[in-house]
Length: 230
Image 1 (cartoon, rainbow, N blue to C red):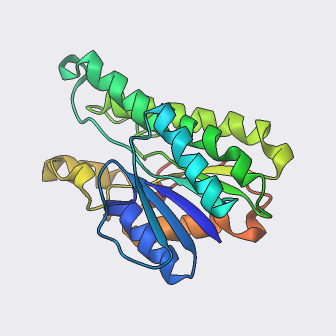
Image 2 (cartoon, rainbow, N blue to C red):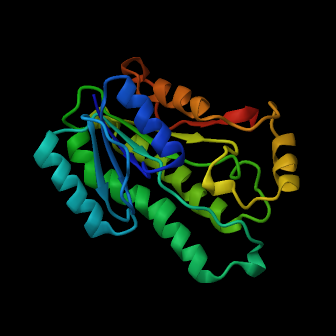
């Protein structure tokens, strides 16, 4: 199985890359910087997914080398944890470009390669900040809300190609994304979950395993939030 994982250099993307390599997958990762992950079945490319031309070139390279893609995991993203009054328009624009348009570009560029798979799958990333309408993260919430809406409509528009597309919304996980979040804020956020703990990388992999399974061909346009958030 050939899987593309964006934002694969560190955090969740790095974990997923190593996890699927252990399962025997061919993993194609990308990020803005070089990766030190070395494996005979791992291929890494440097690009910014918010740059449409770079994403198109990336997909052309993958097409030439592999001919198809079985799963696209749109993990790359960024957050901004500031009150609306302290969030400059440039930050809001950057999050839309990276979180939403980056996902859009990747899907658009890889869809023809996905069509060549027997069980093509797309998994996009959101966050529990969306259903919680989390104050202090307005630009982040808006950009990920766009990803969710995109996924729901996309699921209908590409169903004719046998491609499923779903969303996972992780809880806070110990990554760079939350490294600057005060403990008090994290505690408040965790208290809003049915299961009051930090998420783990394995929690994310578990849901993705379900989404990309061949037996999940009747599951599309769905959003799964971790931690019992709704």
